[in-house]
Image (cartoon, rainbow, N blue to C red):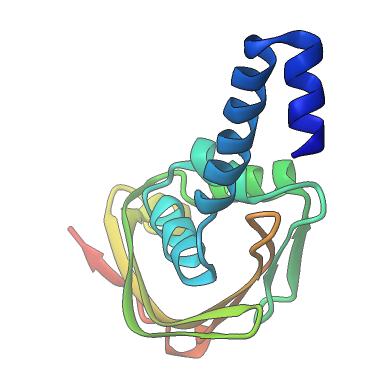
Length: 167
């Protein structure tokens, strides 16, 4: 309060206005933060929509994507985005059937089935469409303060993968 009064005496009412605007802006930014649940759900919506431009806001150079089942790891925002873009090329449909979702400390856990449809040529079936589903668990480690996903882990049940070929 003393700073405010001193500032008002020294710089006048414009200083008071600037101070109040800054105070409200800081408070508004704090309230704009998503909860862990909200951030996780929004991140998955963006991922499944293929909206890599907007999902990038939740990643940084320290973020990591791991396909634990296939022993593949991608580190950093640009590597993760490049992998997603390449891995979904030729996909005509891609969605996640969420069966369970829960949060435990810094983790958000999605349990369900990923469904894919795409060009068969990507999987050795040229000129045909292919469809497959994979049961999976996706675990996100979330830093709520920074509004970032620091670790995205996928555990796919590749053993149950049975592609259907459409003529």
